[in-house]
Length: 482
Image (cartoon, rainbow, N blue to C red; front, side, top):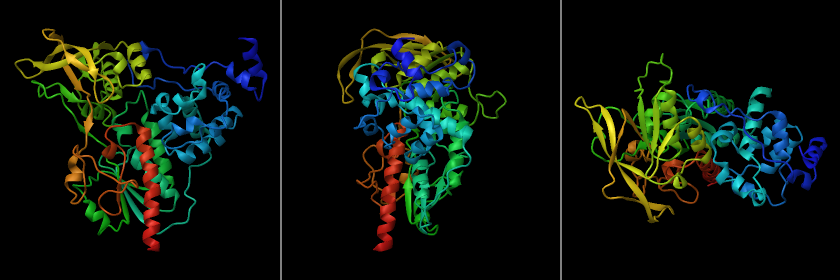
């Protein structure tokens, strides 16, 4: 340890120079070849002293640009300051004021491209580990709290229905409940949590974390009804009519899987990532004793380069695959997955075939997958996403032997609710159109999250939920005073 670092250890309030001398903390994690055999969490979380030391790296800037990068506007310097002072519950209270899912976002939010990339320390070394600190205080709160949050506002007498219990719906419901609104959250599955429970594996976000946040939501007075498919079990018109809801927030996500549209895609042994992860995560098919079947391939190919592809391929390894491989049509540098997730996959012996695109799924005489026919790609001109477009190399076809294929190339808007709702304006891709107040073409019906913006991050969906709650509150007040 250097003399400057040692002085920080002894200083209760280190100077700016002493703060700058502190190196960024490392997140403890389980070893790759140990963890790829089970579904226990990969990252182990920071200890108290490590969290304090990392919090001391924060320079407490007068203009906190990190807050500008946060879709829900957390007081980042505020909660980090209290961590540095050892007031962990106080830090958790600040965090929860603007974030209804702090333990979730501390694990899966892409801080490296949002709040942390704005950190002034990026100019000289590494940003403050804002995400890891958020996870630390959230986990500390769970272990040391004396009670759950309660709604303190007087009841308004207004009723709002939130459709979908993913991050957008949970956030909107929680914000409205804090305002005194009577909120009912409708979920199509048998368990609330949306993509947080069906789309993200246990090794990245344990279900106990989501369950705890759901209990916090219920403690605010939010009622949750599962196994309700709005558009089938109930209609939107029934909610605003006979059910008596004064406003509705649609947050059903974008859960319709996209496929490659190549020959052989209907062979047995081809999954969408949605189905594959839902069977494993929500239905607990990772446990051999579960009633839900799932194919456990020996050689697995996952098509795609995003976080969902990483989740699927790492899941396949834990389900016993001898070889699990990502097949991605661009280069590593163009992968949309978080760098941490790609690194974790590599540590777990996941293989990568870059600049490779499937052109056909191969099957045997019984209709089961036996391989992929692929073609090599090169990078051409920039496309509309700002990435170089993959171009096939003529005559470069080759085959990959596999017995399971998981397609993880994105999702689209599920039309179940939207097609069942007259007068709801959609764009050409089937997503719901909203105005600046997040209201749809139907008065009193609001929408946000992936069903509006397309597949995006948990924290962006939460930002939509927060904005929608404020707009719904203004709408309800306006109707009352109108």
